[in-house]
Amino acid sequence: MPEPVNPNADASPARLSPPALFAELAGGAAVSGSALAARLGVTRTAVWKQIGRLRELGLAVSAQAGDGYRLDRPVEALDPSRIVAALPADVSPRIGDLAVHWQLDSTSSELLRRVAADPRDRLVCLAELQTQGRGRRGRSWRMPLGGGIALSLLKRFDGGIAALSGLSLVAGAAAVQALADVGIGDVGLKWPNDLVAHGRKLGGILVELGGDAMGPCHAVIGIGLNLRLDEHGSAAIDQPWIDLATLAGGASPSRNLVVASVLARWVDAFDEFAESGFAVFARRYARHDVLRGQPVRVLRADRAEDGIACGIDERGALRVAFGDGERSVDSGEVSVRVRS
Image (cartoon, rainbow, N blue to C red; front, side):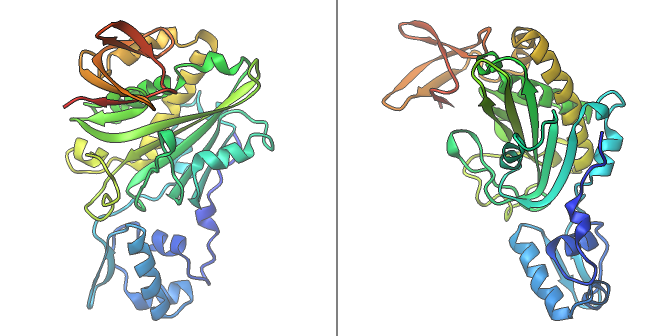
């Protein structure tokens, strides 16, 4: 595997930038404004202005006279070297590239731009900040600086697009296993793409497909996970949420270790999916299916139908028992809401 790329390390010490200041503060120790100014080669006023910018991005920074600036709690910066070091020995050689960016419109968009230019398989992209992070059906995904994980992987397939049915469910089941590997349990899957815990959203998965309908084709699989949110960082979220820190009893798990765990499970799962299809994953998904047996409302463009969720079929479609019988619901057609 090539050396991982970390654009965060490109910030010149002679020029103040949000990534450079973030790196100075990330460890959690208090640093005076004068010391920061001296190290970064700028004025204390410039430091003060950039501290304000970091706060706008969702980073909780306190300032106390005689003490300096300090994060309210330490934040682990994404580090490609630490991620690669945490990967199993048989996984890291199978990753074509792993890059961490300070800011992107979207990690998935970045990989989609690289599809034609970079022929390697399993390209991985992460970002500290996304300006246009997105979820299913055009919804946005918001993540405060240091408060979550935005990760995307490009997987190439020899077959056609039709054979990729159920891929988002494969990604979800593998992600739940990955979280269990780092000690985070009680995570379920809400069809078709949400990770949930205790009735609240923990994360979401978005799969975007491209290529020839008959093959070859590719998929960009993106995941957003809430690591640690507070009232400020979660203000724009329009549904009940939960984060990994809460599930871990208050202590945030290592961001880099979570990323490595997800990648390890994804690489193995996607290779198995390419060889065997979705059927072998149906039972794994069923173990975490929070909708099965629940009353649901299926929202279509022109109407809503109520029924009971009955699990998934061999393609990964949702089986729903309606008043007139059971039918399979395809993820591209509907939005599902649990009835209250």
